[in-house]
Length: 347
Ligand SMILES: [Zn+2]
Image (tube, rainbow, N blue to C red; front, side):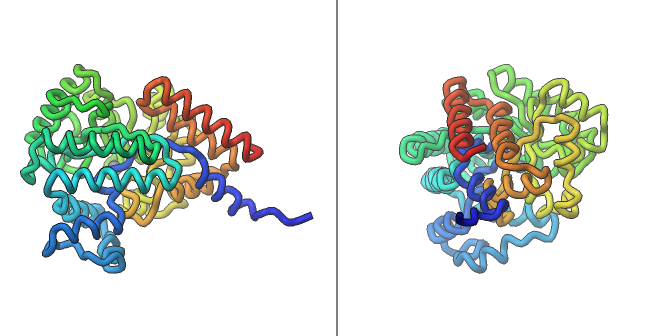
């Protein structure tokens, strides 16, 4: 008889090979040091360090405001359509390496349009990258176009115009990100109404840095079908019950919440309370390289916080499929793939 791997090592291996879907991950925020270095080399003299070691230090955040500041300096490196194409394609490569089969990638066209990239060229670049990534890496990308809340109503107007008028094939949803404090959700209602009327799903960030009222606002005013983060939902039992009753999933990003100080420590993370209340919990990486993480690491963190074995982790992957906006054929195929992989692993 030979000794098997330790349970933790076995779980890590299971997670790495598990076919997964990711629902809350940002386009620019997925730029790994490898990709940022490529972008910085294309634009010498930017504020962002070019070598990966200095970049890692640059990506250590003091607080949420500092994170936004660093994030925007990387946004500043995406200056032309070729940058957009390169970023998108390379992000998909990083996803495929983690066995991410499907991702709803949150992209912020306003940032690029403001930098002078024509909306049509932006959309063409991401669509080109999407098609190449699907055929070359086997990872299906879909888009969430999000309003950068800090840029105000002008950005909401531009984002809605691009989403509705250009309507790229890969676009499935409409979002809202950036800071929550001082950026009330209800003011964005007309733009969400327009996007929803055009058939897009509503997936705003809410309750990450503010309380449960922001989540109620996102549900009532923006028609939220999933909530980005929703960390403060556990402060309001009526809200948790509402999320369960209406099948509204939370896009939980544990390491991000610690990095931005939205939650003090992982041990205090409310993911357990969310799951115990019966909420559909999905696990995501948000801005993975900036937070020194990736989706596999987040699954490992969630497994520890929720005391999951391989079967429980497979259920987390199924939650993401359930909460996604993928088409029926992709949903069936990925579900079958998860089942087969889990059965093959002896789970
Ligand atoms: Zn986010």
